[in-house]
Amino acid sequence: MSKRRLPPQPARDALVAADPAIARIHDELRAAVQELARSEQFESWDHLNARLAEVVAEMNARPERDFGGLSPNDVHRLVGAPWPPRGGPVTVARDLPAAAVRDHPAVRDMRVLLDLLADEGTVALTTKRRALPAKAARAWLARRGDDGAPTHPYDLLRRDGTAPRTLVRDADLGLVERVVEAAIDAALVDVDAVGLVLTEAGRRLRDPRKAGVLWELLVRTAFTVADFGPFAVPPIGAPSLQAGIAYTLCRFQRLDDTWRDVQELTELLVLPATLDAVDRMADAEQLEIDVMATAVDLYVLMPLVNLGLAECAPDEREPREPGTPPRFRYRPSTLMRRTVRFEVGAVH
Image (tube, rainbow, N blue to C red):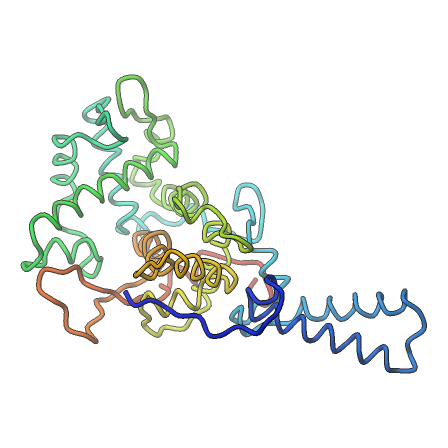
């Protein structure tokens, strides 16, 4: 992935320099103070402070281009916001008809794991990390089969005759591990002294008729419970990618149907202050990859595709070297627009 370079920043204090939107607000406030101080309306410092409060309130309610048409008030409401069932501005449809979501990879793959545990009982995990041993992993893969979505990245890789066997094997093991981690995070399975065992919720949501409830649980789990690793930790002076996930998903939902690659989406979906802070960190450590784009692909776009909330297609604008993983472009799905609601601005 190509590395983004920041444009030159004006000489301002660190907070203002960190975000172009803050820089504009800084300039507008200074202009408002100067205008009011020169006018005959200036009566007292209390009058000046009251007028400044009005200016700030107007700016906070105004849609900003840097936020994709969201206002600063919207962003404040989204960043770090709770999700159902704890309230907040994000609502995910629950109890959807099973037929609407049962074939999406996240639901299908989870039900394969739950069925395997129901049939096999407790399955021991490897000692080094929470992963299925090779025999159980092969059993899961055999039950899953090759009937996945024809444009899903994992299934495309498995069917790619030029992909090295080691790459396919790593993809197999990685997929199994992610499903197990999601099951643990969603409390569908538990890890006892012996190994992995179904919980009461796991036994209940095995029912194919409960696919809609299972899907909603997996959506919440993917973005509010799953560990974003280092991207759950806020960079200096900015929210983390995980803290800003509701903002990122809201921005994604509002996009049109244009196919966009990971780099384009990273620029559009991540809070500007977070992008700049991570870029400065990457520059300081002389990293040669686009750190934030890699994180957006792993923690945002792939879960969205798995849940049916995003569509993906191979990026064929540039030829791919034989044996290398395919690159993809993405766009919001109809399901995303129909089932996830963000109570901000004009989006209700």
